[in-house]
Image 1 (spheres, rainbow, N blue to C red):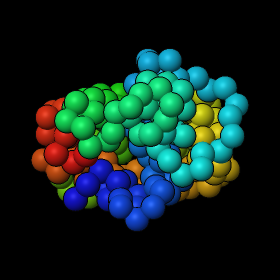
Image 2 (cartoon, rainbow, N blue to C red):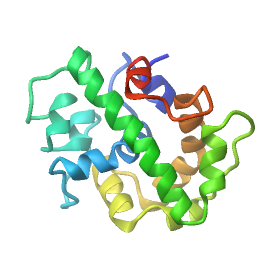
Image 3 (spheres, rainbow, N blue to C red):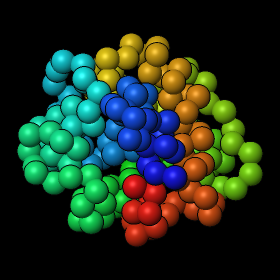
Length: 175
């Protein structure tokens, strides 16, 4: 199973869904911000992952303007694996800081995933994260939070099959 399959995208069947792009963007948030991504207003994405990451170096990994790398390159896979591993760790910490650590940990651990409501999710995610994702995916705030509240528990669960955040090398196999 590939990354877009886990995130609910359309691997090999055209552009990724806006919600799949939002999930990937949320998991890659620190990498986006750490590599020059901005939350400036922009046109909604047209379906490519390069659109989600814009002109940051990550945009080039997915067909944007900043690099010639392809998502199937070994180096690119390594970057994406490290980015997603770090993103998962950061997301769990963000949930813990917002008093929802037990919820996020249930997604990582084996067993039943605790649900999260859109309202609770809006208290965990920053306005900057939500604004960035709505601008890049074309989803409304309510659509984004509703979709993430439904898909994020399963996506995190499937990315952590051993009950822990995988190493970057392990994550590469999911990419």
